[in-house]
Length: 264
Ligand SMILES: Nc1ncnc2c1ncn2[C@@H]1O[C@H](COP(=O)(O)OP(=O)(O)OP(=O)(O)O)[C@@H](O)[C@H]1O
Ligand SMILES: [Mg+2]
Image (cartoon, rainbow, N blue to C red; front, side):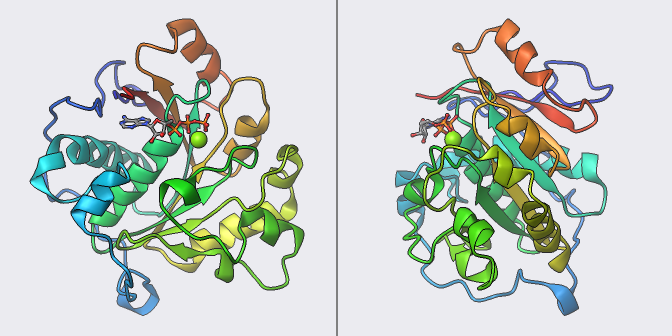
């Protein structure tokens, strides 16, 4: 995968997360935004997965065997942190066309942020038509998910926040699949819950796993809730024309880059 930064950075000068691409990211340049008085980074981590289990779920980890992949995601992380300054933020990941890999990139980017022990990641599955994250992460979403909260908010969002087995990474699954998701995403309740999830802990970084851009306004509607948008293109699948059309859906100020994902 390659990431093209927004602003003045020239195209092609980006991160690469292609399965076997080599990348080197300078270490130790990340600011520590957590504060002991208002931090969730030190919370207990039950049921942590071993590197082999993480590998089976196609998740990056600290083992040197996946160094190239994890370094590539670290590089995307570093670039987002550079764009954001000192605040935690909300990143939307959307694919140019179905199966380009935005869910894969979203969960691995969430994992890369949480490599830093002073940060936590919250992945929210906003693909209400084809929810996948709970399956990919092996989470038993028996308390429901985002849609259940939006329809019946009285229990609060907390019961819908699940451990993933990845230290400091939590998931809000989508809940029961729905056809009409746009109206949920444009609701006051959705905006309020994202704001409160972000503001509650300064060390929490939020990743919205969105639907494909093609054929639906939902990705653009979701971008209203995000600080940054990362567009995921299928390497060798999505044409430059399709990528340009996809990118044009979003506010250029929010567009952090395009990631070229080389799925097997
Ligand atoms: N770089 C990669 N390396 C390994 N597996 C990958 C990679 N990219 C995608 N996959 C796998 O390919 C499948 C499709 O990817 P993913 O679900 O992320 O696509 P998507 O764009 O989110 O699809 P949808 O349109 O359904 O939301 C998944 O099983 C995912 O794990
Ligand atoms: Mg997806």
